[in-house]
Amino acid sequence: MVLVDRFGRPVTNLRISLTNECNLNCFYCHREGQTLSFQEMKPEEIERIVRIASQLGIKKVKLTGGEPTIRKDIVEIVRRIRPYVEDLSMTTNGTTMKLLGGSLKEAGLDRVNISLDTLDRKKYKSITGFDVLPQVLEGIEKAVKLFYPVKLNMVVMKGLNDGEIWDMINYAAQKNAILQLIEIEVPREMEDSWFFKKYFYSLKPLEEKFEEIVVDVKERRMHRRKKYFIPTDYGIAEVEVVRSMHNTIFCANCTRIRLTSTGHLKTCLLRRDDLVDILTPIRNNASDEELIEIFKKAILMREPYWK
Ligand code: SAM
Image (tube, rainbow, N blue to C red; front, side, top):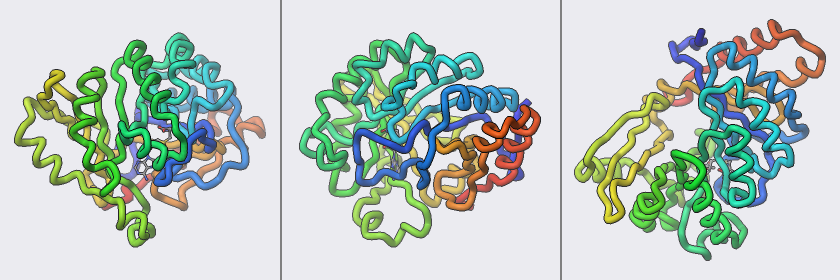
């Protein structure tokens, strides 16, 4: 059984924010579209929501935040939800990967995305506020030994790290990791902001360049994102391009629902009017049937942001 929304989109993925807190402070961070952080879900509450989601055909779960690994109970959370999920992944800034990677793997995590916008230590500090690039690179070394695939998330920003794209492609190929090049994403009302105007870097021209040099191109089901296979001195690099702004194809092929760290289902990162409280009913002893209805209500609220 898979639930389908009013626009014919099956919902198969759940992106769970475990906390809105982070040990870094990236200046561009959208915090997964979450503004509230007055409470956090307990491991058994997260497990229950994932179990209900799996009954509705949602079998792919990504853990995010904030920084998911700063939760003291992160290994317990992974262990609890593992049995209900076919693909369990996490996006992390990598600062704790050296320390926690082994335990996360043992608890059942399948794969990780590690955020890495630059290989330049000073730039890394200016983006994140912390001088921890060496620690993150060690985390990546550890991750590629434990998980496959490891994806490196690079948010490309004009004048800041756009000159490093080819270095990052080579680095990813060297580490046998997949590089995800990501355009800055903001809601409509922020498109006029100084921040967006200054840093937005369109990846469309780069995709056109990739088309000329690739040995292969594939398309992912989710968002119909393109994946390019690019020859480098270190072998073939896999590079995914995430272009969401004003991208109707991206939204038409979105199969994801979100859960905020405060326990609200959320239909889209960019919407501000789409929270459905599932944690309060859980804390008020709602039955599984009632929780299923809450999921269905949230899925009915889904609509493409760019259309
Ligand atoms: N702390 C974790 C991390 O660093 O991966 C998880 C949370 S972070 C919000 C998840 C991903 O969103 C990161 O790869 C980050 O680079 C990306 N991201 C944050 N703000 C963004 C924005 N405005 N546009 C596009 N991607 C963004």
